[in-house]
Length: 202
Image (cartoon, rainbow, N blue to C red; front, side, top):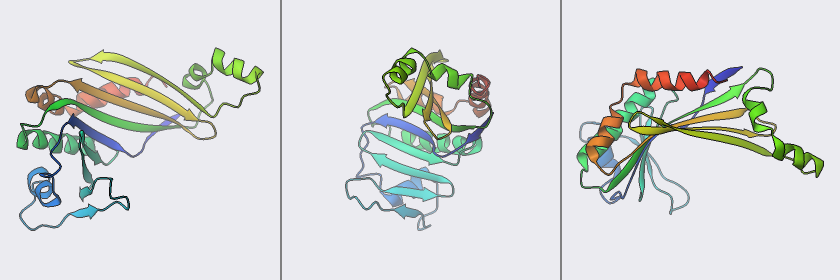
């Protein structure tokens, strides 16, 4: 059984963001640290209700009313850069009412025999549905546990006929900007080690 890192990996900062400030030029200068006038890729959605996305290198910033999301390459190096960008956002806009920050990684579980994690998804409910001739199309299970000053949420989901996915969210809830910046300064090797411990379940 193999775990393959897949997109998206993200850093999400929950808060009431002023989207009027978060223009592409402001993001380029203050979050990406680019010189004045250097171009960034601006992704404009077809639906005008959806937010703009601003991309530079392998990082993409998307600002919504209640969250700022930094999407990165599916690697711990990419996550480290997204964490740095997130910390800059909090530093540059300290009066934003923050509430939480989360580090999110995603894997596809491929190969190997069905068992272990798959078996955990097939229980009494599945058996009863089979007896009623109801076709199962989605299975999922999750666990949340305390980790450091925050918590970890582990979700395993299987759309029948497709590889299972493992999502890990490491979250710190706080209205204190220093608490959230400290979470974004977590040593990436420590984050990687915790994810590896979870991967060992499979």
